[in-house]
Length: 405
Image (cartoon, rainbow, N blue to C red; front, side, top):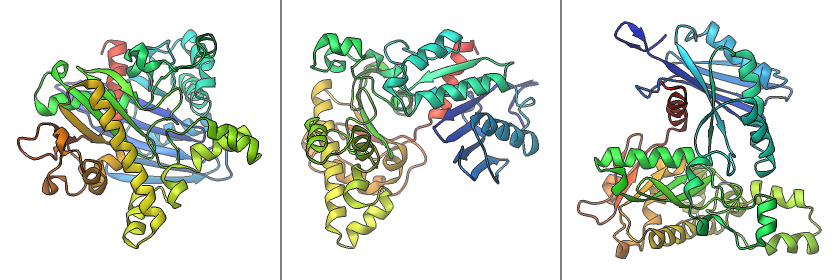
């Protein structure tokens, strides 16, 4: 199966996203924008892994032990061979790799070289849960798919434009420089894609728009974008800072770490686990699925109500702060799983912001949004949008830019 343009096959890009125990993939037509096939291999390295491959409108599942990412990618390639679409016929011209941390080195996508791999490895202390498996995926894919160029696309690249005042932490400058302590941000591929889509949807020049983008999924982040250039973002040196998330605390007094270590006897690793995996909405309510959270709120669960209130309060703080940073706000956009699907969150976040020209129309806002949708009333000072994100498409298109496609 391949898309065609006239008599010539249309180029496709295989996008890979390697996690510590998973491999997500998508075969993308970067011109038409559609995903020709997609899937995931989960529980790599455990006794029983599961693979899900979606193509031709059907889902194929496999259950077996998968020892490592090399075996996972071989399984994926076998699924393409056996189920389709055939990768050779699909005219794959590049493999695009998601890499979380590019540090101060990478301000855009790059062709993977040995030097690039070394740098990704050197930056692993800044993203110890992400960069090592990202690099493993690159090395495995290059070994199994040696005949096409491989491109690394960095989550942090979009935020390389942050002003120094926004990127710099107020700690000893020599310590910060030595250990690369600064704000890098994350979800940059999504924020860049969505902010550009906003301009297309509204039919306005990107350089004329001041935007706030809210990427609200299990991980959540906000950005302030002036004229297509990021000037602020909520995630910091790591994806832990900022908004309240599914399992992450977001902003917290750093002295909490000292307090828990000294008085609760918790180790650094235990505190790391607490703040990254046992906090956020789940830590407050026991649930990080917002559908379950809303059910608990409706049942009268006080802790669930508090969790939702804390989540919304933090969001409003960031909207107000970024409005001040930008000086003028033209567009507020919701994206990602919660942002696209949860009309209750969208409506409640903007409550009380009418004085800033931010409000939603209840009928337009109702329900999930699978297409870009204006949810603010006619004549609103600030346009409120829902724009579905598509990081795989963004990675595919950036890969094509690198190889000159």
